[in-house]
Length: 436
Image 1 (cartoon, rainbow, N blue to C red):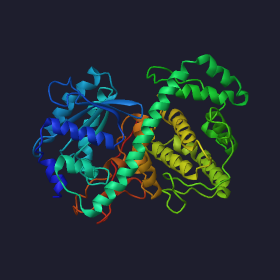
Image 2 (tube, helix red, strand yellow):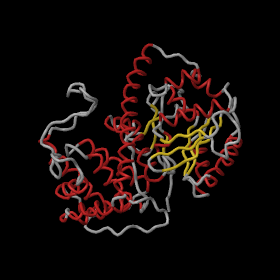
Image 3 (cartoon, rainbow, N blue to C red):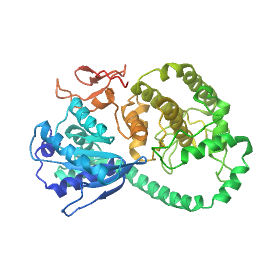
Image 4 (cartoon, one colour):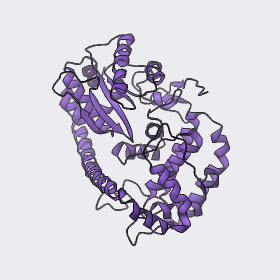
C-alpha cells in the first residue's frame, strides 16, 4: 500500500488536523471563501468548514477515523453532517473522508443528500490520495502526513507553486474588480444610459441581464428573445461578442474574429514556451463555422439524450470553442455565456451558471487538450448542477485504482461509456441510469 494511502487510512492526527487538511484540500480544488468554523476545537454547529465554488455554497465535513470502518458507519456520519446544510442555509455538503468508497457507495450517499434536496460532493480515500500525490498536493502531504518530496516532486511542486501564486494574485484582482462592479451596479441610471446606446444588440443585452441576475431557485425562466441554440452562427457569435464586451476599454477589438496569432501563458511567455497556442488566425473562421454547424446539426440528437449525454456534448463544445480562441479577448466570457444558455435550453436550469477562473478549471481544460474530458466534465457539471457527477456518469469512476491489477488507474474509455485501466486494460461499464 502506498505511503500516502497508508497514512491517510490510519490517521494519527486529531479532528482539528483533519479539518485543517480538509480546508487545504478545498483551497487546492478551487473552492473559495473557505472558512473553518472552529479551528481550535469546540462545537461547530454542524459545519466544520463553510466554502463556495462557482456560486454554490457548501458546508464541508471531515470524517477521518483511524483504520477502516464499515460503510454503515461512514453513512451514519454523512447523514448526521447533512443536517448542517439546512441549519446553515447552504446548497449542499462536501464530505471528506479517509475511507474507501466504491462508486455505488458514493451514489448511495448522494441519494441521501438528494432526497433532502441537497447537493453533495464526496472526497474519498483514493481521491484524496491521488490529490496529495500530485504536484498541487505535495505541500499538504508534507505538512499533514510528513511525507518528504523526492527531487522530481520538488521540481514539480515549485513549478506548480509558481502557477498557484499567479492564480492567487489574479483571484485577488478579480475580487477587487467585483467589489468595484458592485459599486457601479448601484449606479443604475448610468448603466441604463450606456445600455441604451447599444441599440443593435438590445435583445442580446436583455438576455445578458437575465443571466447576470442573482440566483432565484423559485423564479421562472426569464423571457429570452432573439437568441437560440438552433441559430448559432459566426455572425451571431460576433454580435454576441460585441454585446458582452460593450464595457471594454477603448481600442479593444470587439465583434471581430482575431486576425493575429496569439498564445497563452504567463508574463514573458513566447510561442515556444506558451502553455497553449490556439490555431492560426487564418483557420479561425472555418474552425468556428465547423463547430457551430456541427452543434446545430446534432442539437436534436443531443436534446433527446440523457443528462449525462447532454453534459458530455456541452463539455466538448465548451472546450473546442475555448481552444479555437476566436477573439483576441473575451473568449472565456462568450464560452461561459453559451454554456449558461445550453444549460437553460437543454437541462432547464434557471440558476445562474458561474465558472470561476481558478487553477482546477484551467487544469481541466489542459487535460481535455490531451483527450481526457473527465475533469472538465466534472467542473462543468458542478457549475451547473452543484454536484460533480450525475448518476451513471463514467467520470465518477475515473481516477480510482484498478481493482484487478492494483497498479493502474481507471480512466474514461474512448467510448465514454466505461472506465478502463491504463495498465491492464480492465474495462468497467458505467451503471445504467434513466433520469426519468
